[in-house]
Length: 217
Image (tube, rainbow, N blue to C red; front, side, top):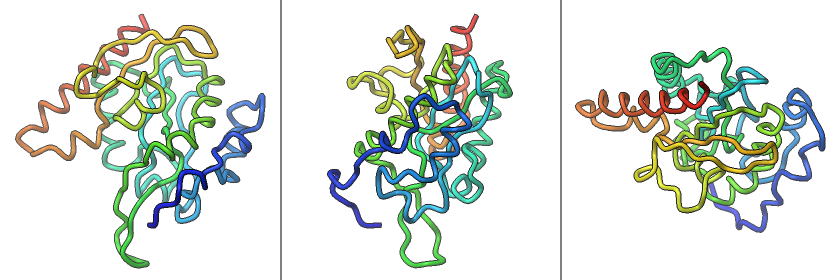
């Protein structure tokens, strides 16, 4: 997929209806042309879970299966996340789940060939951020967990690094007052490490999620 200059990305703000509730935001999102990712993607993937969840999980972007089904975190990484959330003592049914970028970014050598995940760049994160800001303002979670570097770029301070600061609780000012944030690895990172290291990587993710859950007490 060819890269367009950042100045060809007007951003999502003109497409985000002012004062909309979550259902209205979800209905409006398919019309977004804030960046070029809408063109090759199957559909926008907005969010899932509790519309009033006290804890929000923010990932990077939809993957291949999410793009096809229109639901976040339903692929291999999503199934691993669901397991980790349950093991951390978090009720997934009372959790809001979304992504920093709402369309699948991928590379593909020819039609019909496998679509390969490509990490969104800062321009995509910036363009899509009005959707994330609007939905989090409506849901108003007490704790927000950023899964991976892309989500961290959207919500955490610029000097945040997953490798250095994961698992720490941050208190940040938002449009809805002071909220608690935590950054950790994306569940796909657990799947990418060598098999001998996978149990330790998974345990680290669960430990970070437990820390986030402790902030809800």
